[in-house]
Image (cartoon, rainbow, N blue to C red; front, side):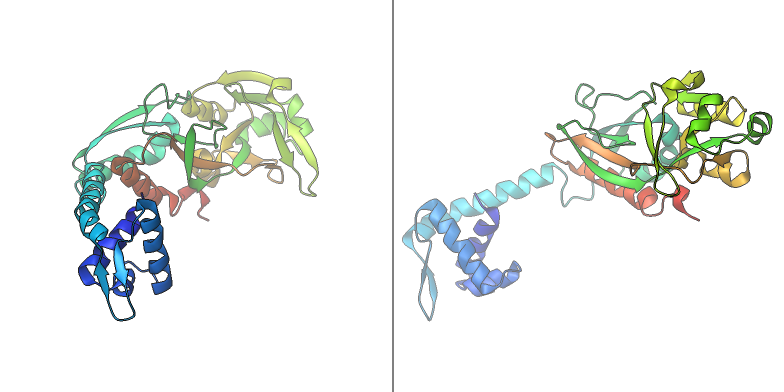
Length: 302
């Protein structure tokens, strides 16, 4: 049943004025009349008697009014139970994230979030191995791509980029590749079972980087170790810009093949199960991360 229509009916019954009730709810008179007519069709009775001079409750309207008020009271109670409209949101939030991203960007903010919301407890599961949201009963997770899982919803946290990089020492020893095909003769550090990546060149030409056909001297499943190996000269690797932007700025790492970009739009996403109500504890954590990270991602600031 349309609760906005019920709110309109209750206000109109109190004011005995449909237009005034509609204005209070931000509805033009024509919209308010149509909304009320729709409610009357749903309940199968005229709830208000209208004339050119006045509005009055019908017998059916008088009988329906206490039930309408109870429906609205139950809606408010349900929202309050979920924390909406209540600054004192409470509960335990189970959140999964890449440990590498969390160490750099989330953990420094945790004390601030807990101070803002003393009723919320955080259960953080941090791993560069992807955890199953549904099986793990997680409320929220951070992912570096939108998953094709139809059971998930997503909210973009921030844009990102993928960059090839290596240490100055590695490039001095092995040379600098000028085309993605040159990577076949280089030492490559692969992150987990890295899939082939389509690339766009400076003249919009298409090419591909396939770690599986390269010299993968190292395959690593931990993001921080992956970065250390690159910094120490073990080979060339493709990193998320959020992970290496400081090292690129100070010269610890050097970007290679800068004119070749992924044929995709990398981004960081906050995902949650579609079947779950977006509870207040999840909503305030999403809002917090958007405010503190998403509004000005450090890795995208010039």
